[in-house]
Length: 155
Image 1: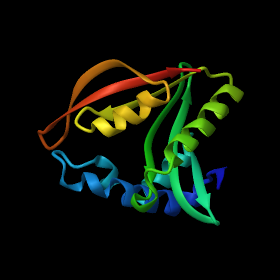
Image 2: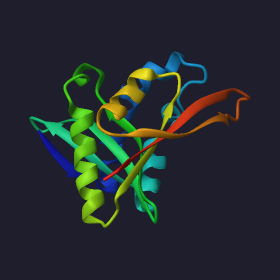
Image 3: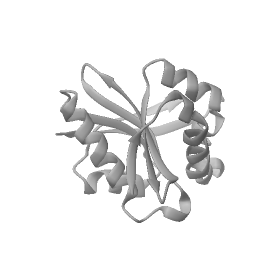
Image 4: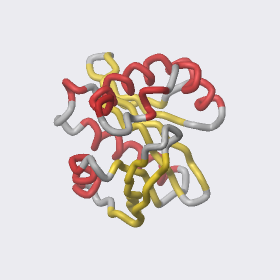
């Protein structure tokens, strides 16, 4: 397994991994906005300061995480592992790599937002040292609301 830093040219790979991983949320109310993203929107984000790590096994992409550095640390989102590769610790490996990168960049806090209705994701982050520091309900453009928790880990 290798974890590499992505470039804007990797947007199709990032998009493919994300769509496959987030397809489980197609039936949620509301569906994940990740499913509305395009290769172009990801390319533009990567050209505008967003970064990503891609995990490969046998040269095949199997997972990724997108993130931004800010003055408060690192904020990550869209953590994605192919459904058939989930449960093997790949998400944890991606986050360990992200934590190492954060420390190299002088950042000592990592944050994310998680659907409050998906306890397995909250459990995953708690199992590696994250804690909930805020809860909110986000109003989506379609009039639906989405309860989320904000989680963080101090490095």
